[in-house]
Length: 113
DNA sequence: TGATGCGGCCGTCATTCCTT
DNA sequence: AAGGAATGACGGCCGCATCA
Image (cartoon, rainbow, N blue to C red; front, side, top):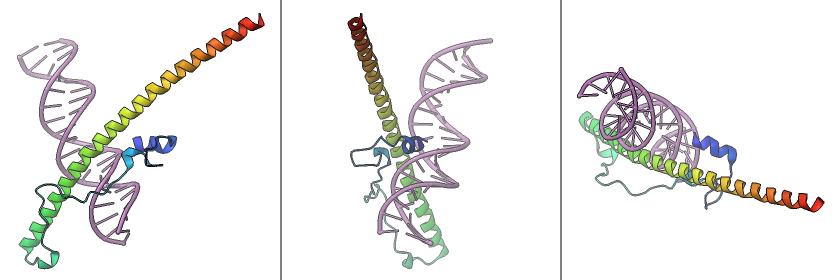
């Protein structure tokens, strides 16, 4: 949703270049706390062990995705806040420019009279 | 005071995007 | 192409405000 908007405007770039900050994907190497690495697949044999491994993998995936979702929402909120700030700045600039234009018009009118 | 609507947060699933 | 991370979409839960 907000990604599409970014693609259109194309000027909300992060310090890193042409990529918006909220889209920068930095690979995380650290495993979340409490996560234990499984034995290598070659050491698993019985259906019981295979089922346990599948369950473990699923729980790990869910846990990682849970964290990712939290992080994603956080980034999205920051991005929206950033856009709102930008809107405020641009509105102020616009206001200033309108006033400046008005002043220049007044000056010009008085000169020609 | 219970019913209802609303907004925010969360977890999960499905899909997209990126890296290797 | 496979695998993992990021994100969109959806539904559930909770707290708060409003109303009858």
